[in-house]
Image (cartoon, rainbow, N blue to C red):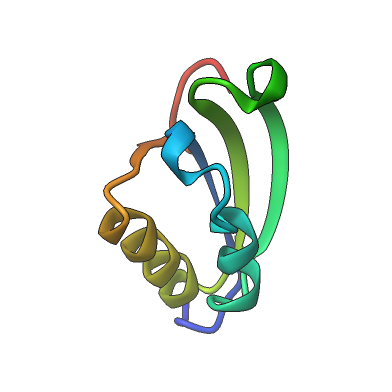
Length: 87
C-alpha cells in the first residue's frame, strides 16, 4: 500500500467540557484534509460534561497520523477502535 492510498481508521474520542468551544473535529477536516464520519456521539444536555464521539477517519495514512498527532497534542483521550471486537 502506498502512502497515497486512502484508508480508514475508527477511533473513540473524549472531548472534555473545556474544549466544547473548540472546533476539534472541524480542524481534522480543514487542517488535515480528513473525511470524518461521526458514527456515534454522547453529549450531555446543554453541553454539560465531556463529549464522547465515535469517528471514522478517511484519508491517507500520513493524513490520519497527522490528525491523531493533533489530537494527542491537545491531550485528548483517543482509543483506536479499528480493531475493536464490538465494531
